[in-house]
Image (tube, rainbow, N blue to C red; front, side, top):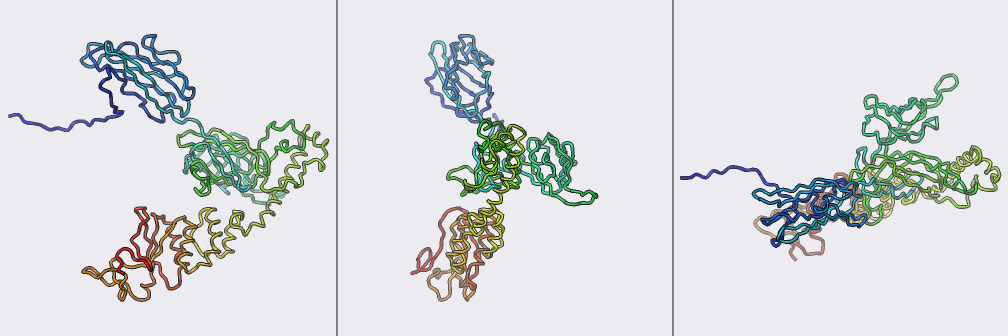
Length: 578
C-alpha cells in the first residue's frame, strides 16, 4: 500500500500579478519598473520580457517607444527589425526559447537611456510585437521617476527683526539629525577661536556628519571671526572644528596694557544648515548714489535656534514639513539686501541642499518712510557721496552703521506701546506680561504661541473662575479640544434617596453619598492625551473649580469617537428613569 508523505516546501513570492486577455497571442510580462511604480531611479535599467502564447515564434518586429512627460516627445528606443537599440539607448536583447519549445518564442530586453530622466517626470512605454501566423500584440504602461531635485528656500516671512519663518520648496526632514531642517547646536560660552582655522568647543560632543554644515560665530573682538564659516572637518576627540576660512586667536578675554583681565566676552558658536549674509554685489551700482540699492552694507546676525510652527500658525492646508522658524542672536538691518542659503538639510526624498539660496530685501518693520536717513541727499552732499563711492566707500559704511543703530533704537522705542498686548508684545517680554497678569499656572509653556494664547485668555478666564464654562474655555484655548465635564457617579451605582440614577436590580449596589461624593466631577476628553496635556487639564480644572468641588478622574476617549454614555441635569438618557 502506498504511503503519502507530506513535507514542507519553499514559499512562493508573487509580484506584479496581471490579468492577460486569453484572446492575446503574446504579451509583455515581468516589466521592471512595473506599471504605476513611483520613486524610480533616474538612471533606471528597464527590463521587458516579450513572450508568445502559441507554439510559434515571435515575429521579429518588436518595437519599444518611450515618451517622457518633460518633453512629451515619443522616441523609438528599440526596433528589432532596424538594428535593435536606437540612438540615445543602449542595452542587451536576448532571443531565446522557453522550456520545451523548439522556436524562438521569447525576447528579453534590458536597456537604459543615455541621459537621465528628469526629476518626478512620468515615463510612458509603448511595446509592440507579433507572433508568426497569429497577429500582433501590444502593451502600454508608465512609471514615475524619483524626486532628486535639491530643495530650495521658497519664501521668507519676517515676524520680528530677530525671527523669520522660512518656507521650503518641498517637504523637509524635521528631526534632530544633521540632515534635518530643524538641526542646530548652540554653544553659548566655552568657545575658543584658534588661529589659523580652528574653533574649539569645550566639552561638546561633536559629529563627523557636520562637515556639510556651517558654523556661525558672534561676540569676537575681531570682525573677520564673526559670521559664518564652512566646516571642513570635525575632530570629535578634541572637540574642534576646522573651518575653511582664516580666523584669529580669541578666547573671549580682553587684557589691559598691564596684562590684567579687563573684560570677559561670551563667544557664541552655532552649527546649523543656514547662512544669512548681506548681498554685497554689483546690484544697483549704476543707480544714483543716494539710492537704497547702493547701500549694501548691513548687519549680519547668526541663526541661534530653529523650531517648527504649529499648524494654526500656517496658511490653511499648508504642509507642516515645509516651514521652519529661525531665531537670530540680534536684529537684521531694516530694508537692506540679504541672502539666505541652506547647506546639508534634506527633503523627505533624501535630496540635500548645497547652497540653494533666496535673495530678498528685509522689511522696514513699521519704520516710517519720513525717517531721517544719514545717506540721504541734504545730509551728506551728493558730490561727497559720489567721491566716496568712487573710492573706498568708508563714508557710506559709517553712515550705514550709524543708520542701523538709529533704526534699532527707534524700533525698540516703538515696541514699548505693545508690551501689554498679548498678540504684539515682543517675545522676550511675554514671561513678564504673564507675571503681571497673575498667571496662576505652573505647567511649562513650551512655545511662544501658547504663551500668547494664555496671556490673551487670562482676563476672560478670571471672570469665569468657579464655573464649568471657564474651565472648558481655557482648555479649548490652550489645547484646542472640547472637553466634557460631568458629575462623577460610580458605574452601576444607586444614589440613596435619588431615583434618577440607575435601576434597582440584583446587581445594584449603593453609590456614593455625603457632601464630598456629591461634589465630585470627572472630565472626558475627545481623544487620547499626552502627559503634558494631562497636566494642563488637571492644573486648569483644580485651580478654577469651586472650593467644594473635586476632580476625581480624567477619562480619555481611546476610540476617538464623540459619543459618551453620560447623564446631564434635566436630561433623560442612558439608564435614567423619568
